[in-house]
Image (tube, rainbow, N blue to C red):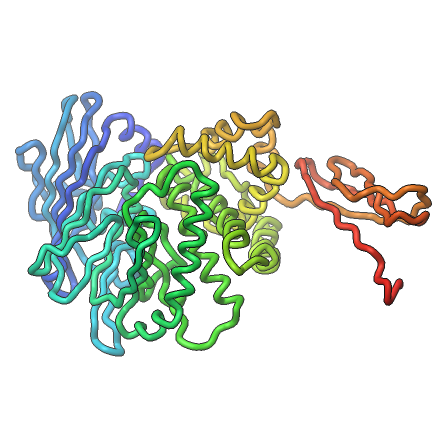
Length: 510
């Protein structure tokens, strides 16, 4: 199976513009395979050759503009589309696809506790081609309209509102333009808890055998979801861009969660089966907040190529912790970040395998290389850097830049350069230099504080930090005895730090 090269993706994006996928899936044909039919409507912007991706068990037929193509021409996962003329085209692909048991493409699971079966998709990073024929790259966004035939008694979930047409047939409303890796379907005899918030249908779902456990925590999960949703709408000028918000806790998930628009999937270990610590509840709430942040940063505005996947994750990591702190009872989440997550980033950043938060585009030449950067740097160090950026810019200017970014690129694609340009439009600070110093370099800076006693006639309030070789800050309590704080920095990155001063304990002055 050929991986997609960055150069190939750029060439294809210059040649075609994809408008719509109409996909029908039949999940009633057996335990090993399902039927997939895709109609792809696209425009060739110039004459040329390209290809579509597909990983079938059997490719029955392919038709381009009414003319049949030879299914035997499928080479690995690529079917050539030669000699495209400029203008509109329709590609029809009829295939049998394999279910996955490894969480790639369409995963199938039978619950050993009751024999019920569930299927769900995981199309990240390039696994949409395991479900239907597709131009599988993030900057060829399109509208997706799906129809699903499922066994009687099953419920179908997707990126948009699902309608039961009867006889096992379900239709999903057309999506706004989204990337191929974000298309999602989940089908089975789900146990569902449904509600409505801000005029939209909200739902949480799990397999039936976990129903009692989900019901116990349903109010808590939905309360966190509503609180984060409302807080994001206070921060972001762009409203939530999809028509529903479902969260499915799915079995055997090979990730923590996935930010599919309108249908976030979580590993169902987050449906707690027994008493857990409040830290575990906070972790689940954090993942809910993280994935919801992606609805804007990642789904509404999507990376152009996989070298910017860190920005998706760093932004959602920062915004998730910050929003959970502001909007829920979990007010000490940054403490948890410092203990659990930041050390992950420090560890990764001091190994020989360290890399910049924002890797050089040349270091991600294909889809296989993209997976190498999912580590503590892309998540924890990137989130730490963004938190420092907010401190350096000020939250008002940071959010203004974010909202400019959403407005400029909504339902489209953007790069790190686009993101920095949007931030720069909202501040006089040199954000481009900040990005070079923080995001294009490796390793840690070291800040070493030294507190010295000083005789002072008037105390000063603690107020700042230092860069370069350090600086002094006067600290005192109004007495003649005060202290001078000097911070020595080893490293070149700009920092803005907070300094805390505390009164002596009146009971124990020592």
